[in-house]
Length: 47
Image (cartoon, rainbow, N blue to C red; front, side, top):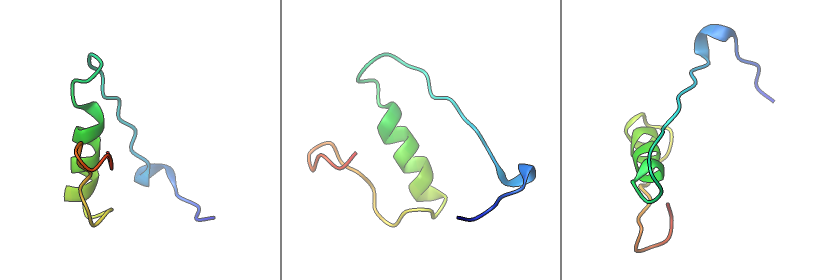
């Protein structure tokens, strides 16, 4: 397991009503950061 120091750890909280797009927003942020190489979709049930 990789060990990270405190300056590399970032915590966020996404708050919103059910079905407001929190998961899709988080996945798009991860995609744009280059951590994943695909976006999830609601139609494909990959969110």
